Image (cartoon, rainbow, N blue to C red):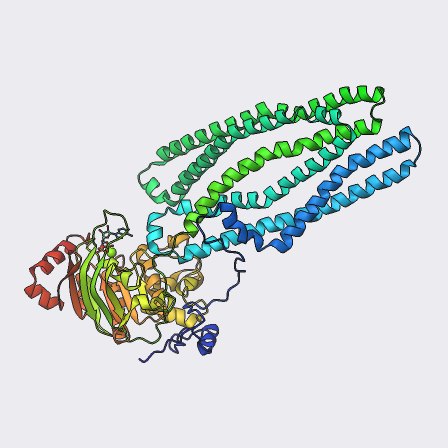
Length: 634
Ligand SMILES: Nc1ncnc2c1ncn2[C@@H]1O[C@H](COP(=O)(O)OP(=O)(O)OP(=O)(O)O)[C@@H](O)[C@H]1O
Ligand SMILES: [Mg+2]
């Protein structure tokens, strides 16, 4: 059957009845500028606005700056409003001072004027605070969401070797707590630094009134600062410990829930509960220590300003009696004593947030700076129509990039004709799955080349290449949605008829039809409400629906019983001419179906021929098969 895969869309295949949206996109004009999207889905999210600065030698704030700068139209006015609100706060005691002196002491002005002024300043300040808080939180959440989207976008581009190395818990924790701590610092540090401006203005104002009284007023400030630093030095490590132990508890719970089948089958509940209790006890210890530290410092920190007020009252009161300053001045100074403490108290916090944000930013950069090891070349073309010829040309490959890597494939060469079906046979761990992963370019070869229809897979876009390859593995991952949505995963708009047709071919229709909700049955996490064989059949249907030109079954029927498997194979054989097929199987019945059998040994092709030929002439083949029959452990 001639097929045409239009770049930018998916072949509107009459048989499988493509959806409206995909056939519409198939008609769209294709220009080299647009990216090929095998799964044509409307983009619903707002793309992140800023990118981090690519220069790794810059400091972390400089590198993050473009992300903040993208929101400058909200952020800068917000900061200006915050500044004004802070200045109004400094103004207030000054106005009250004039009020007391002029209206109460000297009786030269009306008190009402000052009452109105205080009211206006108060209302204005409340309004400004309302607006700048809104702006501030809005910016904070936008930076948060931009960082998150940027990180996720990057994660979706990273190659499999990254995921082989990285623990998923690590990635998730980076996406959550690290982004949060960076976001908090970036948005709140400028705001807190505003209190420094407030301090300078108030301090200057006080100096112009009475220098000695000003010096007395700031006397406790070094103490406040010192206490803040001490508290931070004690709390900082503690908060890290709490974070780490929270993660431990979360991991234990997560493993208990995800691994519940293993736990129960070994009746190891007690052991797991003990483990959790241990983690919870450590967490409690760290949390109590945190509270204890706070409790010991807070009374002092909170009461030092009162000491300041006391000093000002004693010395200032004496000055008032001596008629060196007015009552109004005394009032203003007592008010400023509290205002002046703010920067000294928050400075410690900014420093702590800064340290934490720096560490978090570096962890985020570590991901963002990882280049995908498999990436499209800038001039990569889309692989449009293909016949399905595959060629492995002296392929050498090893996983990882350390020094201890051992070649998995060692000059592996194989040519598969369009429409041919080939069975890969070999001992466990000999590299069969690796061969098909390389074909789909999950990894790049170290030497040699893999060609599809004569095109090196590195010269075409990965998306267009993978759109032609339908791959089913033995451990299929199902999503927690309905069976219909799972089957239509790569064709979100596919009509029900097409979904059912694919399910019938994969022999999944019969068991799905028996479920109370049929195709609308929602499967549990990872499809665990289905049996292994049922999951595999759904996965086969999912792949058949994409109508691939190259079909790869990597142990895809290992959990399906022999009779059902035979029917699947019969259905697949009916369409055998439509695709080039690579089957990796451990059952003789499956192997025998292939036009040709390829025996792998030591990372290369040891022999090739029909099943009969190999049985007759190749003792190593018979030996491998004997092992397979030993219980299919291979
Ligand atoms: N992601 C990976 N990272 C590092 N090494 C890997 C990775 N995947 C496989 N290997 C190693 O590469 C070798 C070949 O693995 P592969 O999965 O290709 O074997 P296989 O022939 O498919 O085996 P099986 O029949 O058991 O599925 C094995 O020794 C394995 O340990
Ligand atoms: Mg395998």
